[in-house]
Length: 395
Image (cartoon, rainbow, N blue to C red):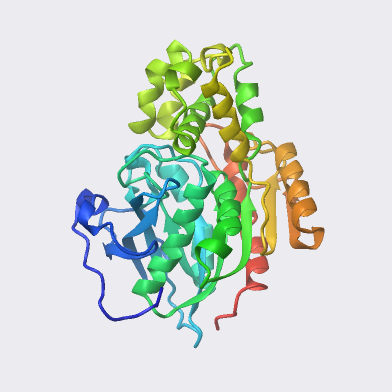
């Protein structure tokens, strides 16, 4: 793809119409801009340190080869660019749910996902202050049409990588040097993005990937959830895991893998944010025994095969950094340590940096997940320093 300032893509319509481009516009090369515009005036999605915050809707490709529209944000720094252009950080966000209204680029006051969409802003503003452009995909099916394939690695990777292409198409002052950073779901997604980058975006140079508290060992997490005798808000993640598995293997039949109680609630994944799914009147009201059928079936085997494929133990050519808060109540620190050791064994120990934090500054999170999100702030200076050692320096 040639980066050019000529033949600018059209401006997107105002409001939610921007997220539904007509099928006639889904043509071209993955990473092409469909349309773009400044963020809505009532949006809280923009970064305060940015010179500009734009909504971009760009062409990508589903894992089954279908052209799709994906939304996201492009934030440009206030510093002047290097002669070689602004280095780019592609940010991969954490879990907000699968419903379109939860998408980070749609963030508004009062939305259930707002606190979780806002937590990373301190870190992302630090990146802008360094003179790095920041691009933030919503991922496939979040904001735009279709279900969101939660934790489906190839889908997440394409969203992360194609938005870098789209940003460079709109802004030729962006460099081909980039890094990927993500937290939680986004940490897992970032690792998949780094794995697929050499083949999917060959014209770009990936300088490093940083995963904060990355999701891993999904099959193990599901098995543990199914053993719980009491209702648990964490069951919301099982609902989301299933959406990703079905996107990866559409032959999976819901009625063969879900118990009647969870099957009746499954439609909630498309109209509730993760917080809503954790409510006692949704998946949070189910016990572990009400989640998955235990009978052996082709669909059950396929479901767990997809869960195994979500584990991000991958071949990655770029330097890797993993960070984790030991007291994290959402992502198990022991599982993250195992993942970092697997990545080191696969890619070379000199390539993997593992940074555990015995203490972090917890956020005031209503679900007592402060350590999970507090990691973002606690690690921000060290992470920014690590990236600064890899990316071209902007004065």
